[in-house]
Length: 171
Ligand SMILES: [Zn+2]
Ligand SMILES: [Zn+2]
Image 1 (cartoon, rainbow, N blue to C red):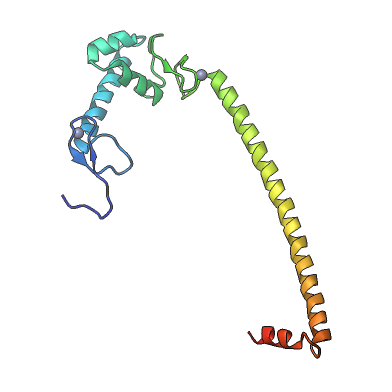
Image 2 (cartoon, protein in one colour; image 1 turned 30 degrees about the vertical axis):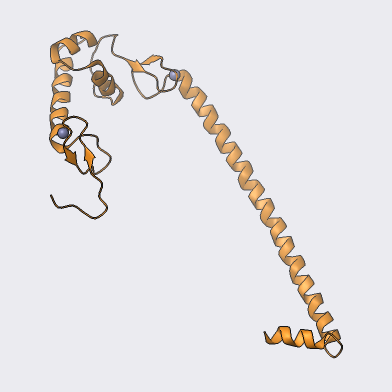
């Protein structure tokens, strides 16, 4: 197998064969195709049996509980009529849900946290602006100091500081 430099190999989670994942896939191409085919069969079964329970789908198609939950989460059965036992745990609190990654409570909480995070962000941006104002003042003070320094150097150029001032200008 020809490999691009730096390409990482991975063991297929299904058959264990080494393959090079393109976008972090966990299955090799063969297993991915088989998996998709199987998913299609499960979807077809639900489509053919409106209101079917998850237990029945598992028994009839051989699909695992985990697999069906993943499929619900991925939206495989959206717009299909399926039983009340079709659900999977919310990623936030584990409560059973039927679409999305989070239940409505977790979504509300997350939105609030996101809002808070963006507020903190805005405060930081403001602080940075203030910081740069201080930096600008510092730079101004430094320029004034240098100007005074030049005046002093000019003033003392013919005096005991003359040598130092000259050598600095030279170097
Ligand atoms: Zn495989
Ligand atoms: Zn939740």
